[in-house]
Image: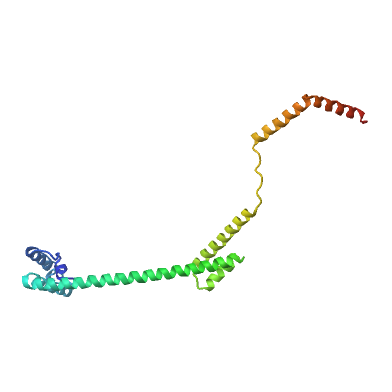
Length: 207
């Protein structure tokens, strides 16, 4: 329901002159003679405008109306705040219940996935718990993927450690060291003696 100020189209702190000008403007706009074909509606609006102006143009009546209006606004604001607080509590309770339900369904899905059941079985179990198909599919997919990831990590940890292959440069240096040692051995006296024995052995073979 509109206030008297809203009926005239002015703010609640309007001056007497502002109220008078607003009344004249509204009265002309809503006069039945200016609303051909809508006389009944215009007449009712015109009457409301006259009553609003009659109260607001009288200082004593306006003061009483302002006091009543202020009290009603205070009560309205209190009711609005109380309703907002109650609505916030209901929303928080509903959100907590939804989160708890979701957590329970995830736990169920993970239990079945851990036991080795496939995605279709997990999905069917969730549907059996009155879970929405879209949510059931998402939870089932996530549970199966998480279980597979955990299994892969366990398998990786169980693999024996393998010796890392030597870098090409390190391998090349090792070969050069072996070659150098062979040359040193051949250049030593013992190396010449062994070489002569090996030559004699080859000469004694018959092909």
